[in-house]
Image (tube, rainbow, N blue to C red; front, side, top):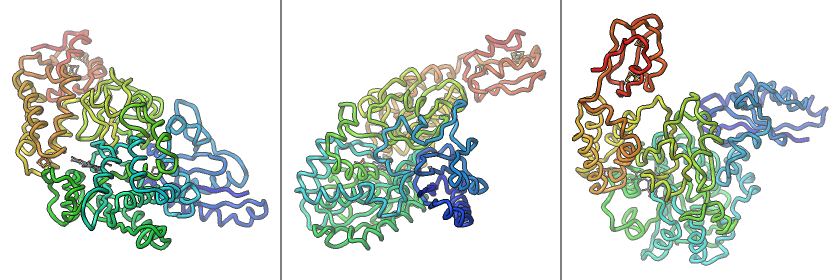
Amino acid sequence: MKHIIRVCTCTGCQANGSLEVFEGLCRAVSGRKKECEGKGIEIEVKETGCTGLSETVPNVLVEPSGILYVNVNEDKAERIVDSVINNYVIDEMLFELDGKKYGKLTDVPFFALQERVLLARCGYTTPLSLSDYIESGGFEGLKAAVSMKQDEIIDILKRAKLRGRGGAGFLTGIKWRFLKNAKGNEKFLICNADEGDPGAFMDRSLLESDPFAVLEGMLIGAYATGATRSFIYIREEYPLAIDKVKTAIDILKENGYLGNNVLEKFSFDIEIRKGAGAFVCGEETALMNSVEGKRGQPRIKPPFPAERGIFGKPTNINNVKTYAFVPLILRNGPEWFLDKGNGKSSGGTLLICLTGKIRLNGVVEVKMGTALRKVIYDIGGGLKSGKRLKGVQTGGPSGGCIPEALIDTEIDYESMQELGSIIGSGGIICIDEDDSIIDLCIFFLDFLEKESCGQCTPCREGIIQMKDLIIKIKERKASEQDIAMLEKLAVYVRDNSLCGLGQTSPNVVLSSLKYFRDEFERRISGKPVFKINEKCTGCHLCFLKCPVKAINGSPKEIHEIIQEKCIGCGICYDVCKFQAIDKE
Ligand SMILES: Cc1cc2nc3c(=O)[nH]c(=O)nc-3n(C[C@H](O)[C@H](O)[C@H](O)COP(=O)(O)O)c2cc1C
Ligand code: SF4
Ligand code: SF4
Ligand code: SF4
Ligand code: FES
């Protein structure tokens, strides 16, 4: 019988020693070769892509049993091989949640409750094996596409309601039609793999785990639009993704899937361009400037890229996930894709990066329209701290904060927008009752201040001013008027900035003011300040109850309030039984 031991060698697992695990497994298998032969067992150790369960890296999957081993290290390699030879399961290496152990990967709720279509190969195939790719349906989409007319392909994408997954959510079919109809002897495609949002790593994961799928989507795009050249723009911080895509391009060229006369129908070339890690270079026109060797600043639109894009030529740009969906839609049909949505403006699934205080952080895939609650609690396992969820921040620096009271909301473009946030590229950061919304706003504004290209005043100056006003509020130096000014300024920056960075920068502020206003108001000057006096017995109760950990002190010693952290909620004042807290 043949067994395969699959070891994830993507960035997260590698950083935690999966290459050593891989080597250890190979050594253990070759050391027991004779024994295996005697028993009629064949064991192969293979590299695979990211399962998405970042919390327990390195992850190892044994097939055909389907057993998942988590937090594996080199020392455990011998035992894994022994368990395969002698047909047993290593209990203490299984995934465990709430006291329950799970043997098979597919039984773990984190996986069982997902809808994995983009991630279907991730963890199950070897990313750079062309035969694995083809055996799992690779190039069926491309083959179907080249048997159609260009307009038929574009119509299928429109019927599938594929909206771009890079943030803006524009319909891909419409964009492709613009490029197809554009006049010009040379047309370009760009794949946007800049992924600059803090806490987002799904594009990297997909490129490392299933690079051929993204390239196949680009090939279909080239055939459907008439583009002959393209660039994949990947940030330099993703060296493994860059290496894998480079090798994947070479493999496709060697096998006639890229270059001249692909499938005897069209010619197409893909080049990699590395980004230096500027968030603004993810904006499509800044990205084009960057590829051209210019400063990464957004251009004024119109003209739009389909008319005058890179090097002044008609261009279409899509996100990594958008391209990866295309072969699946061509293979399975638009209805299949639509069926994965919730009947609103977009079909398909959604890749989400779960981070923050979540118990199981990682990359997950769910149907469009899945409730936030299901993603956070059923798939993500709830909060690590066991504390109350305060809310979630969705969509990265361009997104907003949503309070716990609204986590039954379905994740789709319309619902997120109604709440004042966005899906963006799919990041969800969970925060608990210990986290300060004010600090979260400062974090994102600080990020955007540094990442703003600076060419237009509302964004360049407005973000700094918003941040300064929030710091003033945090330090209890602000008045009611400052909150009103903050709101006015946020609307001004939103309405007057040139590109999406500035236009969306106030989302975090406006949504926080909408849902967590009391946290801001409690800090404005004139509100009570609490101080601990000498009657303090060190009973420690206030320390335990303070929601923002603003009290210092060890049991039986006089405690102290850290005024910069205190949000003035008065809980300590209410719980102290010794009149040891003064309200000023
Ligand atoms: C500041 C900023 C950063 C962006 N970063 C990215 C990014 O990292 N990846 C991405 O695909 N789109 C990013 N976008 C959106 C792109 O401008 C563009 O809309 C997208 O690449 C189009 O692809 P899609 O239609 O497949 O979504 C960013 C936009 C802005 C304003
Ligand atoms: S909005 Fe900000 S990032 Fe965009 S062009 Fe203006 S200054 Fe640059
Ligand atoms: S609850 Fe009162 S007595 Fe107890 S530690 Fe706090 S201030 Fe001191
Ligand atoms: S008032 Fe007391 S309980 Fe509330 S944040 Fe300040 S120190 Fe903490
Ligand atoms: S990086 Fe290995 S499972 Fe995600």
